[in-house]
Image (cartoon, rainbow, N blue to C red; front, side, top):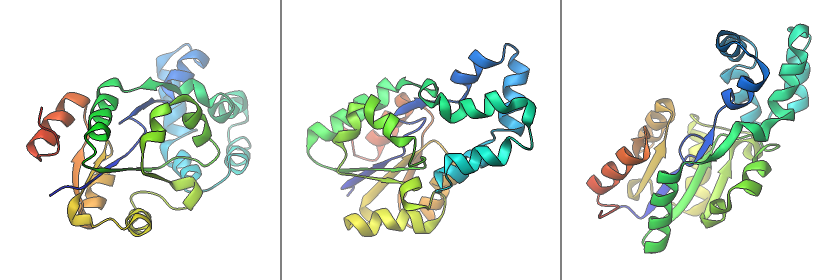
Length: 203
């Protein structure tokens, strides 16, 4: 029986995407994608999620790409512009789970400690969780087992009675290795169907 539901945040409950910012900075789509592929890359961003400071991250890139200094500084200087809003269908599911009173609800998120307050200011539903574990605060992140174990141990969660939802298949597989039933999030409609199949939702 599932007693605990664990959500990822970005791209599951919160519509976060750097392209929302960089389509304002670069006119050409190809240049936007090239910048995010080769300069402010996902791997670079994950280091901030893991605890590296924004200052350190920025200072690392500017000497390598001085012609992109303004765009590099914008990644965190204009960070709220990457947050388009809630993913309404998933928030509806979250609301139903909360209202049912049947589940403990947690978030396990890869997010910089310095930028997470922007999300807390913008999204009231973050207060619905029974606990949130933020990678940048813990200086650890998905997909490392130690990060999942921080959540499990802190809140006394039995992995065999938990279900985890994440848009990153790498993170889903890491959770499954720890015995946590997991769902690879592709959209709210499919998530609802899968939670009904798991007996977590009824409709």
